[in-house]
Length: 504
Image (cartoon, rainbow, N blue to C red; front, side, top):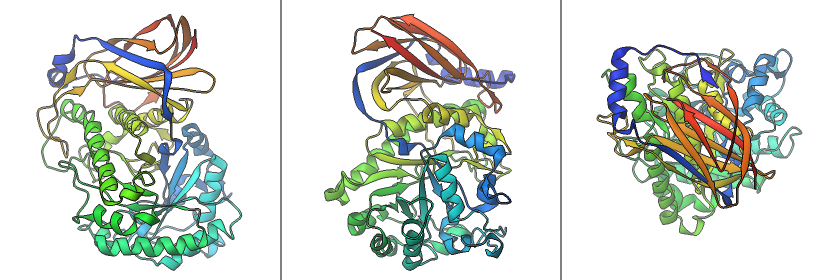
């Protein structure tokens, strides 16, 4: 794939060149060991979010009671494995009974106490379950813990899994970001760690009394560096020590970067090299979370997995902010690929949902029928990538960043090349290579070990552009072949996916 080319301005080129100067001449190399499987890839990492408002973010045709025809092909093209509903912040204000029964009789509601908009409830539980059933995705429901009762949550489980005829719901999350406190919406439903932990036990007992087979996620998280989502101390410790026997996941929102909310002005040459190094911060955070689970719930350290139930590149909160629309650029697609690599490679991560699939705002993969570059980055992993993770090593230059960008402190030793590989039951080998260099293309040699190899052939799909801020994407595929190795040129700002058939 490629992006329609935009021109650099000289100042941007100069600053970017300075950021990447130390890596301009070093070689790129990738080695894939096809002889040993690291682990099975957990498909639940390839999840998405949709909300109940705006007819399920414009994905539901309420006049025909079917998925919207205009967007259905785009949704199928992503092939998500699991979908979270009814929304992020909206979840703790959502009463599921408002969205069942005859559509004409359902009440109109505000999505939160701080949101003055009013929407109908045409996309409720039955519509959501029908949508996921048609798509072949697992439903994941976040219950209202902030302003509802455990009885209401238990009734929802009963409606879906006992009396319902559409699709049973295996995965349930207990609230959303109740650890926040400060803005009007979060202040209305915030909980202290002790109160929330007690509610986890109460809700879990009530819900599992209806269906003992369901899997539950309690919300939590831990602050790392400048990233400070958790506004109560000892949240994870309190929740894990009191509620670990009742939960299967610790659900976190640790991957919104770079969050630029200050009044400083940053160039593209400063924003994107910092964003491309944020995966190392998230890896540190995931290690810290795993350590907390082992420390505060040692008997359940192998049972409780990490669920990242929301994540995205996020440059600012305000819809009209100076960097807000950067979430729809090629640079954000590169961040998407880096994060999916991080989640897939981490043994402690068992569930991930990108925020979000569709909508009218800047965070949507599909906006007004237009796919942003991150759509294709997600698709590289969700469609035709393989089932078994392989060991992948890279050799490349590293770069440093010189200043704080949002919640990203100055970074050192950021690799300019990342790669991940897998294979499927038919013997196909897949390699995804990510070139973070925003200045230069690089010749990359891909070699294979762990088996006797002779010839191979396949395809390369490419997402690239001359400008890291490009937003328009089209498909570009080419054939590749070789003996013993592949030598390709990775354009600057690029993600390349290879599907190869190996002949021994």
